[in-house]
Image 1 (cartoon, one colour):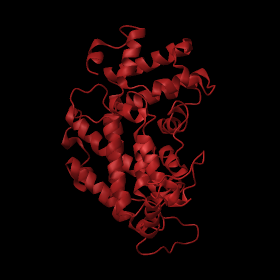
Image 2 (cartoon, one colour):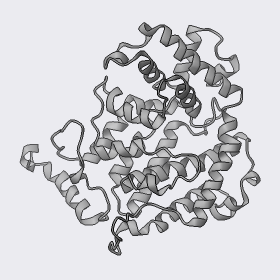
Image 3 (spheres, one colour):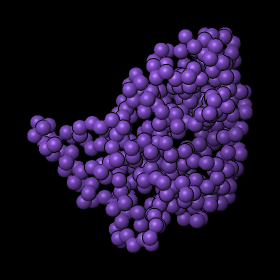
Image 4 (tube, helix red, strand yellow):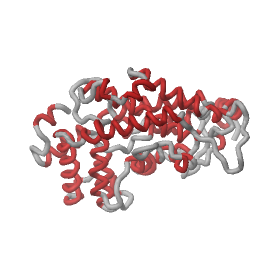
Length: 367
């Protein structure tokens, strides 16, 4: 379809697609060669396919609700703690930096980074753990993020995103331990790997900052190797990790040509020193911050709220908004979708309205 079909503007998208083909790494995902959308659509006059994905995500209700969803600390006192939205924006900026440095598709990395957490529950991983134990078949926030963009947004119509963006959203989640497992990365585009790594870099850096701000940790509590290798300030830790990913993954930029053995694939990596420190620091944060954050009084209140809401709506399905049943979903699935989409405040006020006192006065007053 030529540019005349768009009032003469189609050349804008076409020129950008040509720019990608000429300037990006041979290993980059090209928007003109996307594997497509679940429902085929005609191309846009101005934007590439991945740019359209980015715009669709950022204009959703689920994206807006991230500003009132917990990252780690439930009901923190103070305006400078990270929320799920500010985390998402930090992931997006890191992903763009790495993708641009390695000549990968920055638009694809940005679209997936913006959408990677839209399915996250209220109260962060506490809410995810509760729903995982209650929903038959379990609950994973990365799967819920894909479900959100596929079937929940636009009143059940979904966003009809490209295969590449959907893949990156689904596979951003990392296991405890080494998150650069080769077998997992080999299934992903380099841009999806960028999002996966950027997510880990972002939350590790800002969660340390929040733990220091909350008084849960002191700088001297952090592992000595981490302080020596990554630095002692937020900006130093971020810069050290991002630089190391770029330098260790430099072959992915394709400047030196590609001479790989049969069956070999290039993947994003970190140097042995930095990856060792990062994995040690992640485990330290699990033991001293993430697990304890879910065990205090605020964490217990959050668990009680999610458990109560799930049980209540299972018993009173007519009080779940009708759109959640439009796909003939089982009641358990519809209830989980409804709760996962709630913000911290909405879930608290909903629970408090149904059973006054379900959340403590202190907890209610701090959200």
